[in-house]
Image (tube, rainbow, N blue to C red):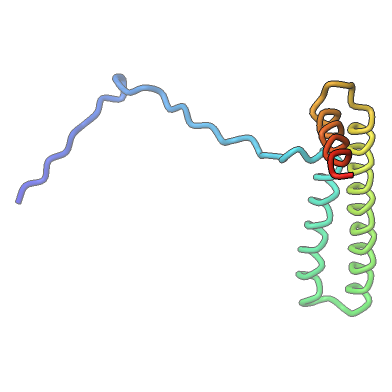
Length: 111
């Protein structure tokens, strides 16, 4: 049994074009993503801390985690308010306006 190998000259090879993809934010604002990341890090540290720390330290970490939960909720509410304001101030002729007109016409035809 014989084994053969094909050698490729390095000079004839094309350069590698590998790049990591950028993280997809899925339309979420940066302040909300930062708040979520900080909360997730604190939660991970809390679970690790509870394995070996005193109950007082765990209670302090839990209080900090609850504070971060509130910050995430506030960031989410702020984001939702911004979306509502953006939809309310959309100029005429946009998709939002055409949906409202379609809804009004449908309600009139039903009545």
